[in-house]
Length: 514
Length: 125
Image 1 (cartoon, rainbow over the protein chains, first blue to last red):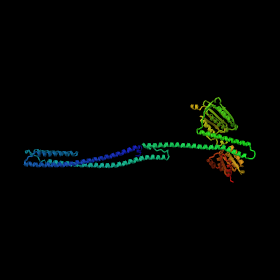
Image 2 (image 1 turned 120 degrees about the vertical axis):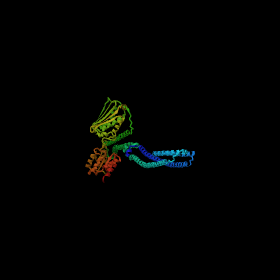
Image 3 (image 1 turned 90 degrees about the vertical axis):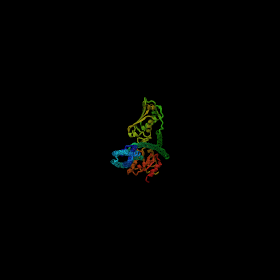
Image 4 (image 1 turned 180 degrees about the vertical axis):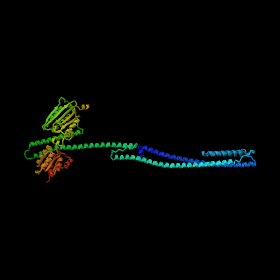
């Protein structure tokens, strides 16, 4: 039954069960009406029986009285020969008609079962009454001998009346028995129906409650699982129907949306945490990078202070060298601070790009010329290859291009000894290409993948050996992106590195064409 | 400063810092032995048996943390006290150095008189 009702909606179940209960109730009421009808019929039958018995009694007395009167009159007629006056005769005839009417009335009470008996009585009384009427009509006609000896007919009529009476009583008993049986039957049906109705109603209610309760239980389980945070749980919609299924689906949808929202919040939190970690890491790195040149500056200064207090001659050459070291470290500190500020500006989106038309060839030449002392530091050779035929004006930010070339060029000088550093530039309608190639220490694939990240140098010890902030390439990459261009790196350990920058000649038209 | 008989192994890959610190230690009366990377550091600890090691942490070949833990695992040199020198100034960095086996910790820029006090404090009298 549960399986049968499982496919029905709650409303359908309620309608179905109400219908079943109402049907049972109707059956009950109609059985009760049937019983009432039988009782009414029984009353009618009882009344008919009583009427018939009274009428039969009455008729028998009337017959006997009429016969008695005729016997008396007949004797009087023979002895006194006194005539019968008209009023007496009419009265007697009227009584006979009255008897006839009573017989007819008895006929109307009867039914199929008594009809034969009634017809026989009617036949007999008709005959008897005809004889008696004849007696009264010819009473004063003294010549005629009157037949009064109608005892045969009279007894016959009485006997037939008795028979009809018995028959009526017999039928009344029979009918009353049948009615009693019907009443007993309807009473039984009523009681059974009543009990059945109660039982069926209880069963239906229990089934309804259990089926509904099971559905609600599943919803409750789902709601509890959702509430305890298990948002992957799903209420089985296939087990439900109608409103409950809609509710289950709504619950499941809600859980899905909640899960999505929680995922979003968690991913936002993870992003925020990552950003926070990155900030902390940035601060730790800044602190580390500032301390390294400061260590040299403070250390050498304190040492020189100590030495100046020593007795005897100061080693001037040594003194000059140490002061140079302090200056070098101070400048390194300055460029580090500038790089950090640049990177901070880029990261907070405050770095501005100022586009203007200029000659990149001239700018590149000036940068390389200014940095030429770096080339000689490690005994390197420098080649500048500018394709003057292709080089024209470009619309870009010259200060950014200057820093890009400066950073790449000083990097190349830093990591190359006894080698060649080549700066090449060319231009077509859309792109300026500048490449800086060295024959220095080069990088592995793993190092290349990390080299554009802030504070990363190919080796953590590289900074100590070669100097540098680990910010230069990060800034170069950011600037290339800001100017609408790209940077490409090819490198091999022990062979050298080649950084190739491509910048749009006119970002506005190039972007429009793209 | 009575440091005349003490030998110090200075492990530092940055030439400027190595030059500066070794000269100052020399002036202060220590006998200074130099190493430029982690492998050299362990080698010189075994050969020269210095009284104390000043160990930079960001080193090529073997970093300072590795050097400290390997030194403490080697019975022959485990007793030599190690003072970490690093520009990493966070508390977590200090813990990292100490748990790697360093006996003390000094941050760059170096407070030289403080460093000398640390060296003398760490030695058994």
